[in-house]
Length: 113
Image (cartoon, rainbow, N blue to C red; front, side):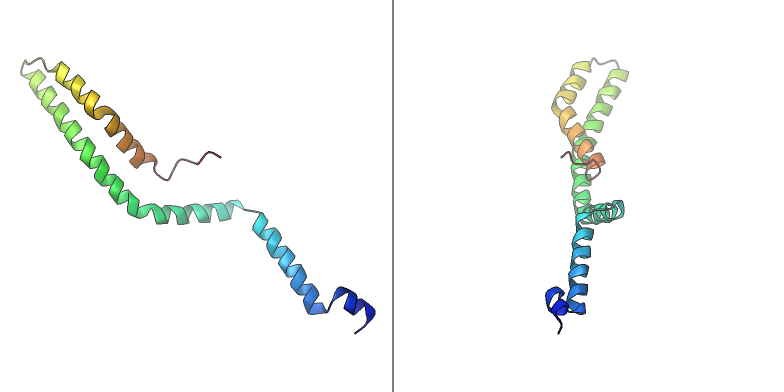
């Protein structure tokens, strides 16, 4: 082996070194296509939780809507049930808002860094 061959290594060693440098540079740059692929993988992993979110939304929104229907029906028959509607909103308003917000925005909103 010549002096330069020993100094710089064999051709295969040089090619392996260059390939490892290229692979390292490629791993440092995160392209939009790679971001989209990772986002799709994240949404795929998130699918089982969507079922749980649907149950939570139904658990809160069905009684909320039914109670408001009762208030409306009572008001149509001449009863003053406005205070009952306010109590329903006080008791169920924020939990329903949180459940619907979780269901509609889960996995969609970007994380702040």
